[in-house]
Figure: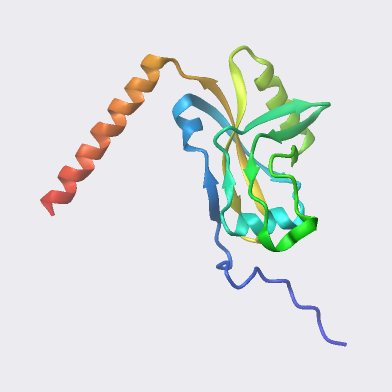
Length: 166
């Protein structure tokens, strides 16, 4: 009897590397992130195929705790064209998978005044499984946002100066 082969990631995916699908850059601008946690996400087949084509928008997405479970709300995964009638709903609620201890910790932090759960990044891990990084953040005030813009501009000008010196 022949030994079973280990399943390998699809040909388009490099083996052993994390591939970012989408990043919520607005979240890092609007919120001061205190903690991050990696969690799984329950998807249907057409959603995964659409994610392989990077067709997702997380601009208006957030994470909600409902009945002691985490749910991703407002993420827009485009329909997969070849799925026809078996396609998924673009903006449906998607369940997030975390350990009970992590769930308790996140729920406690989210219920503190001013904190919220924000999706930061969605990616394929080394095994080709879709994962989501959720951050616990507190909203920034307008003057904090201005300060982040100033520091980013200063960093860019330093990088330009260093590049021109070479």
